Image (spheres, rainbow, N blue to C red):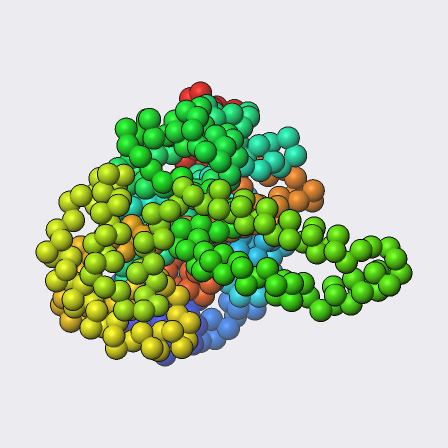
Amino acid sequence: LPKSKKRACTFNDDLQKEFKFLKRESLSEASKLRCDICGARFSIAHGGRADITQHMHTKKHMDAAKSKCATPSVSEFFVKQSCESDKVHASEGLFAYHSVIHGHSFRSADCTAKFIKKLYDPKFSSSRTKSETIKCNVLGPLSEEEVQHDLYKCSFVTLTVEASNHKDIKLFPVLVRYFKPLEGIKVKITELSSLPGETSDLQTAYISHVIEKHGLAQKIVALCVDNTNTNFGGVKRAGKGNIWRKLQIQLGRDILGIGCNFLSCIGDSIARQYICHRSGFAHLSFFIPSDIKTQLDTLVKAGDIKADDFYCAVRSFYSASVDYFDNWSCSLENTKELEWVLLRSFPEWRDIQSSLSNFYSKIPALTSVDKTMLFDEWACAKNIVTCHIIEWNKNKVAVSDRWRDVFSEMGSKSLNFGVLSLAVEFVLCLPGTSAPVERVFSLMNASWTDEKSRQSVTTMKAMLFVRINFGLDCSAFYDKLLKDKRTLAKIGSSEKYKTATVNDAVAPSCSH
């Protein structure tokens, strides 16, 4: 071979480890190199390492090196389809969720996203527009899907409807309450729309549309609304122009009407224990606090008031209050027989049998209950109740948690509880308070302030769906997202900007 070939230097493995920015131009030419920093091509055949050092001191290479140090690589901002991309998309979803849960404005997302990108992850991108889009077009519909899945599986639901104004917009949220044997009572929001008025026709069409949309015609057992003439037609509930009557006509069957301002159903039966003792309450010391008595004595001594007149007014007020409560709760007479569900004591079979028989005509699903199977399942459940009831009462465990414990233990022992859970599901879907729907307005008012006045009803609807329906803290929600590949793909896709937001359910006659 010629001597030049013998003396030619090559780019060996040691040089490759030291100068990682240099690459061979071809496998057959071991001494011809290409520089990834400046793009220059040169040979090290004569000088070897010296040729590399000489190249690194050229003006072209040094300028390119300075530029590379000052400008981050574009590839850092591209997310690879891997576990790393899932974490980035989950972080962006969590950021949107976190801002809803803690009431942050959309504008604040611009600032927060920038310092997250700077301090933690250069791939993170969730400024105002993206964050709002994730809330409205990804997380909102996801919460609606999960509620719809629950409603498909449950047997009984109660609808709670209320109206409130936000400036000139009249808003109507619709909440559903249902019971899941292994999880407990659930209260979710299924709709929020604005209507041009509060007439019974408008509201009936709106509620009917929600019932049809979610397939609840055979599952709704009660309507929970305020005690107004529009809703119930007065104390006697004799009219046919109110919402409750119109819904029953459309459904072709009876449903319970719960005028639920503060107490009803199970709460009503508890309250009646006190009303039964109203003769004892008539004694003034039971309902006139000591500080009021002190003030009364002062006023009597000063001659500003007569004690007898005050006591007479108090008795009159108390009597009127009890009469009012009795009049408005007369429609719930049958519910007092459902106290066995409270599990405060050991229910007897006759209590279960008689209580359900009163609702057979109103609740079609109850007519299919196999009483033999119900008795067998209750016999098994009673043994579990016997073991836990003292501890439950001592710790004041909630009713839904008691039944959840019962069904969980029956399931772990491979015992059937489908028929018994159906009976319990019916009772526990009946609400004892209208607090959940009032909380919707509180959350809405806290988020829809004068400083955040540009939000639309659609955006507010998505935010309420996310905040109320998921019910998870931020850490748990992040774990949930990491397991949901479909949602992560939506967060990372550009399709979310084209997708319609949470479905509106406004009846044609109620459109705004």
